[in-house]
Image (cartoon, rainbow, N blue to C red; front, side):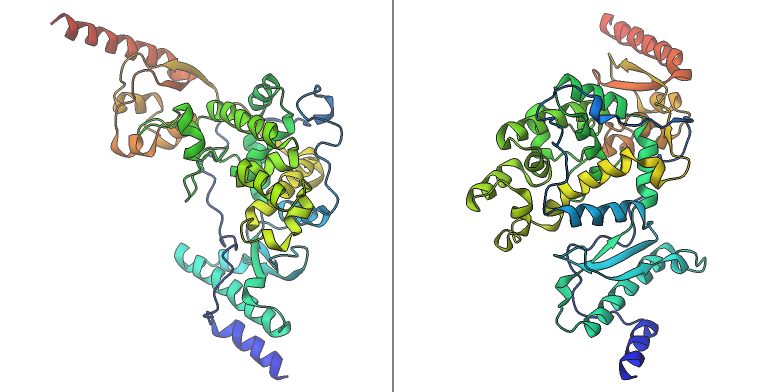
Length: 403
């Protein structure tokens, strides 16, 4: 009876405990996927048909089969992707992730129209913190660091599958040209959920969440244009990174993990612990300090999304793809005034960024001119206007040159 009253007191009193949350907890709210609306229309979803691809680098029949010892991890992520929405989550063991202690539902908090966005966030976090405290009462052998909160992603994955229709076929073509298994294009689901405007706190950017250190050697980053955020240019670089990873590690489970953790770091661990078996590396107690939760679960979450996306109609109702973004590429032969650019996009800055995510936040926020030499994707209905405006700029530049 005392235990029951204590649990009720914890939940109803709104206490936030001083015990620190697990640093690997996901946020209680996902970042918004900007541009997830449907301005371009829908088309039929296509089965990936991975089995029909050619004999590409390391693309054996079992190349992406769930490794022995990782079944529970993959199953965990499948449930996160297909059973729990972004208004739900679970509290589980941080190491033995299949050991789930509590399910969390934020539905009543999210639907409370009297709460501000900030208050909703605080109420969600308070609920997670309080439920963790109850778990520690129920299971006194556990510590706070043993508990981790994971937010659901079912609705987010469904949105990502829809958005993938804008890009995935082009991505597959690029990977085929590089003789890489097209399954690897699905890493974008794990990295960014096909949020073309995704930016991370640690500096990774774009659909492929490419770090500055990987982009600088290819001169992809500038103050006004960042090609890490260009869907096609970023995919070409991601293909190079993955090909390099496989050349170094000679195994796709290690190479994919290296995309998150760094290939050199993975190679060092295989030598230090004398195993090339990813499941063994993950379960090696000595490696956990240098091999964090995200890295240990990166390949498992990738395998889970392969299964989920391949069988999308099984998990989601009326699954559709977005149509491709309707536009024409145009190279800026002269610097383009920002005001002129925005007119081509009906003065809609979000639309401008969805078409051209490689234009930097600095350029957008300060209304800077687009540098000459930049390729832009122009809406079909504005293409002739853009050509006319560019011709006018050319005449103006020529006139200044004569004077």
